[in-house]
Each structure stands twice: as structure tokens, then as C-alpha cells.
Length: 355
Image 1 (tube, rainbow, N blue to C red):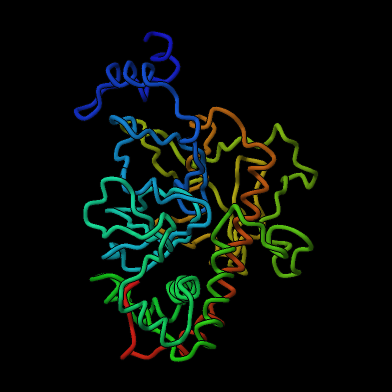
Image 2 (image 1 turned 180 degrees about the vertical axis):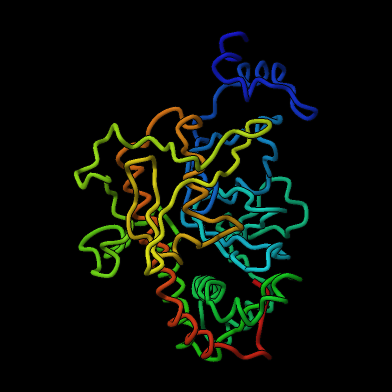
């Protein structure tokens, strides 16, 4: 046990609910489950790798009912029954396993659901094919429009990211589940779903978006988040250490955010520094302040990459990813007026359903 305790002290530290040595012995005897190494949305716009362990307490809460629903083609919406903050910023989209976000517990709603062994509260299905994860009322309303579950899913995503919806329903969103207006026509449902697909592509950091993260960048987005050096020269790979004070290790190894370093310009944009010399230039103030799942997204990402925590500089691809994240958020915010107009067309108070 000595070598692994020295190399990975955090996982070999026992707690009231976790016996490190006992767990280690059991897992070595059972063996490694290669297929359980999966992509994992740890925080908004922060996808990592996770080993999902179905036995014991290696994971704090393994949620055995969750993992079987992670199959190819399934997609998810994050929501919460009560928004703990005054500002609503839920409704994250993901195609991979997701963590709990912010204070309290996140719920992840899949587009499809399949019965699994031990699911006592579900009626048996006639086949193993996943079924749409819809309430009966939602099925009836969709049937009336000849719409599809996918269209409803992306319509919900579009509405949840609509500024006007968030503003007008702020009080209700702090009290209960989001309630989503249902379009009156198939055409409106399809149009709203198309917007939702745009939102999904921007939220999913694993999906390239032409004009935003690949291909010829739009003239508006191209100057945002460009990596620069104070001396005006090209940034070298060895100069990418994050040392500006964005995060530090707190009690129990929990990463605590720091103030970091930014410089604000007269137009409201900011330069975001990795260290004393290297920075991402021309980050719009609205992008820098953007939150999702209870986190200030870009700042939160940086807090985990402070050199003493990461134990290395950023790689070139990671530094480029921050630029891409900045452009993704800018493009998402730019959709606001279009989403507002779509919401106004869809809003029929007598025909709303829970997400």
C-alpha cells in the first residue's frame, strides 16, 4: 500500500464513509473495468475523464441508476427543482456523464431511457430499445402536432437559455421546476428546436462549431480571446503556466477560487492573465461574467489549472481551448435576441409542461 499511498494520497485517505485500504484490496481482486473509463462533464465547459466504479465508495455517490442510461445517442439536460441563486443559469446540455453543479443536487434528464435490471418502478418494455423519456401529457401534446421527442428536447433547451424567459420567470424558477411553454404549431416547434440545436452545439465542447471553433472564424468572434504576450511576440509553449492566482488547494484538497488577474478596458472587455506576461486578450465583459450551473465558467476552469494544482503548465491545446470557450460563450450570448423572439412566439400560458 505504501507506494500508491505516496503517489495518490487523496484516494488512500479513509473517511467516515470510505475505507481506503479495504476498497483498494477489493478492487485489485475484482480487476479494472476498462469500459468504465468515460468522458465526464465535471463542470460547465470542463470535460474530463472519469473511471466510474460501480462498487464500494471509490466514487462519493455512484448513482447506479444513472450510468446505464449513458449510451450512444442519448443526450441530457441538467436542471434543478429550485434555483439556489437569484440568477437562473441552469439547463446545461451534455452527451456525457455529468457531475453535480453548484450548491445542492443537479438532476439530469435524458432524452431516452431504457429499463435496467432492478428497476422495480418501471413497467417492462416490449423490447430493449430505449424509449422517449416523456410524461404522458407531453406525449399527447407532441402527438397533436406530429412532433418528435427530439424536437421537444431541443425546444426546451432553447427556452431555458432564453434571456427573456429567465428574466420573466426568475421568481418561479427559484421555487420549482422550470415550466416550458409549448408551441402551438409544428412549424413553431421545429423552428424552436432548430435554435435549441444551435445552443446544444455551443454548449457541447466536444462538438466543433464552424465559424466559432473551426473553419473560418466570424469577423466578430475572431479577435476574442486571442492568446498574447506583453512583449507583442508569439507565446511559447513553456510560457503557459497558470500562476496568476486563480485557485488554490483548500481543506480536504478542495480547489478554492482565487482573484486571479484581469485588466479591464474602456469598452468593457478584459484581458485575462495566465501569468505575469501571457493573457487572453479582448474577452467581452459579458463573456467573462457568464455563469452556468452556478459557476463563473472561464474563471472556474482556470481555478483548477493553477500550476501548483495541475503540477504542470497548460498544453498548447488547452490554451487554445480557452479561446474556443470564450468564442462559444460569446456566440451563445449573441443568440439572445433570436431566442427572445422565439420565446415570444411560443409562449401560450395555457399549454405549458414541466421539463
